[in-house]
Image (cartoon, rainbow, N blue to C red):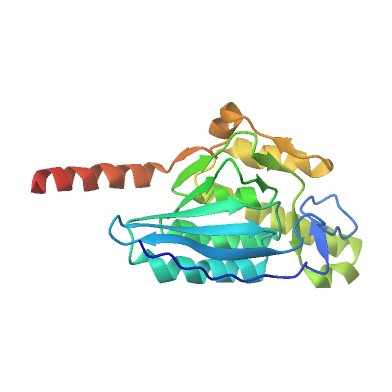
Length: 228
């Protein structure tokens, strides 16, 4: 097995605002101050590789994670993104999630990790999602957009509404049930983290496998058995 590490740290975003269209003032996410993305492992013999993300998910972390995913994807059949993040930038999380799904990578939260707020959007992108119960939580999400700090209330509301629609569309594209977006929206009025047990994780689609990927696995296994 060949292991190698690369990391990048990012600073806290200067201004963040609530996802909720009812919000009128910017909100700074104190929990998602910084983060890093590293290659966890690459075992070319076993055709398995992993990326790990620690800390807040911002633009720089998402960009670095995307580069790492692309750099090892061609060398492995199974690629997993391991998450341990208190949240971060919603837009960056969705951009990273799009790449994860494009590359047919899995996502996981192990017993030593956590996945709150915007991290849940990344978890949802995995073709196979393996979270640890009570280590994943819904919380008020924020996104970095400095120009909104000086926007009029009506303009800010329009932008919040637009972002909410993007999140809803993104989750639908990831095959998540409508209930997940509804519960994320409901959480926008609370400062608390709502931890999810195994039942809620499955009900919200955060623990499971994408049907298209599952079919591909069946077809691939069938081809292998026939060739043997």
